[in-house]
Length: 97
Image 1 (tube, rainbow, N blue to C red):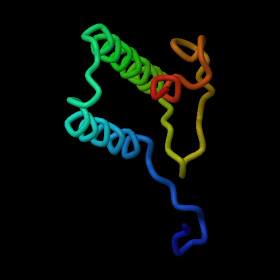
Image 2 (cartoon, rainbow, N blue to C red):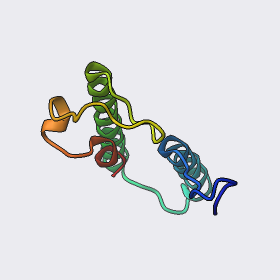
Image 3 (tube, one colour):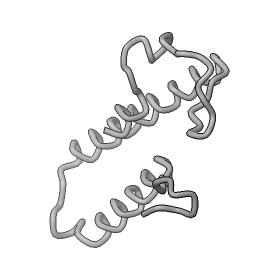
């Protein structure tokens, strides 16, 4: 899909994440009784979700500290290689995984 300027239409990652969270909640409510999960699996899911959110927050903190932001229309001013970026190339995507 393209917009009026003939550039590809982009959906922000936060919108995609929100849609998947709502979808997961709806599926859990709909099929939760059909496919019961052990309590340990629920806790593991909670821990992994919190770890992913933490990675995303660390990435944003490092962007703020280096005064550079991930805006598609603005060229990056700095290459961030400190903090969480010293361990992974894209902690936001890793957090989504």
